[in-house]
Amino acid sequence: MNTKTPSSPSDDIILNLRVLAMEKEGVRRKLAVTAAKLAATAQKLAMTAREKEDVRRKLAVTAREKEDVRRKLAVTAA
Image: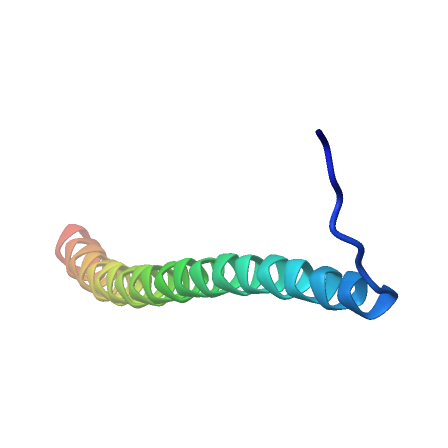
């Protein structure tokens, strides 16, 4: 025998609200994980930018040194 417990419209609303609350919590958790991943990626990008800037500075120093050597060679060759 299949009996169904009678429910009122307010019981249905309460049930729907509970389901929506659980779904909302699931979405909130996924957003929190995504935010954490984005923060980690931002930190990695910032580190890469600093490393890139360090390399650029070293290359600029090397270029100046190379130019100094070229000038000295030009003076010596003249």
